[in-house]
Image (cartoon, rainbow, N blue to C red; front, side):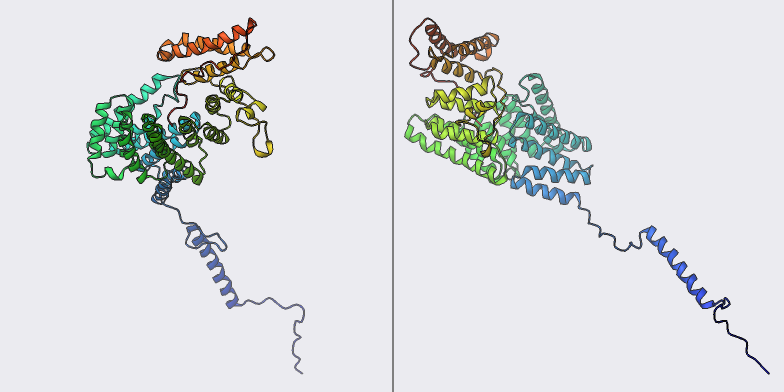
Length: 489
């Protein structure tokens, strides 16, 4: 009897399957191949983020040019910094960055900010020359940057540094013209250097050559430098025309409007007929107002246009409007002692002697807390309105600030009374002014006699008060024409 063997229901014997083995080997080889391809970059892993295309240096440079034309110089600088990061060996890009950085310094408020920006520009310009030592434009822009660094308001305690910058600027401009005698920018920037060296006839010669070049009408720099020359020579109408040409090329450069407005104001000042002069003053105000409105659009918080407006209103005798504009300037720069001084002079000329005391104190010896708000023309500080107290560091006495000192002393003396005697402080101020006149006689050669007469009047009042005399009935120096205190913007 044949009996079939029992099936292994629970323990099957292992069996080999050639097809299954072939499949596993194929999968293993495929996996190894894919790993190799991933390592080579031929295959990208799943779920990896899509790569962002890398922008070219030219793309950043075009963005910088657009922002430069729009007047947004900070954005232009940032774009050009990205351009040199992508292509650090491009001398042309470094030179353009230096030019923008240099011009942007005109939009900065404090001396420290301007100095830092100009030194950054100088570094960029030197890098351009290092990369392209035979490039005429690179040398021309280095000359331009060096010339703007030669700012006596920045290096007022180091006049030798100013001269060093000017000398190097001249050398770079000459080198630029040696490399390309027809370089329009080089001709214009050399003319500017010569102007700042007070070589006016040579400057005129070079700027005229620049104006004859075919590309002159497309370069704001050429018209700006020519306007600067004409202004220096006292040809204010022609200077305004050139500033207008520069504005047409760069309509968002507010410092061009300020210069044109200042030339209108100078023209008005020389017109003897007040009615005729008023129309010219109003033209200057239009330019200053345009500068202020452009700054607001660009979110540039620069007090300079408002100070220019205030100076113009002061010359028109409209002191209330002048004071309001100086106060507006202080909103933008509430710790600037010089602006407090200008407000004090406006108050003084409007016969608001009590109000001028606080402003002039902040300008001269400094003030803090509640006094700073009073110095801005407020009756107290209002923290909810951002009119918070500010610590103000006073300005050292020098030819630019001495008017704040002797005016402050004069007001203190004039407002002194037996029960409110301010003469102790007034006499200290007068002595400081006398010491300054003695220490720097050459700086005050033209104004010393006027200043001495003013402080002698104040000293006479205080001496009379000390001897029991009648209090003053007028402010010393009130009838005297005070020297100009607000520089043309």
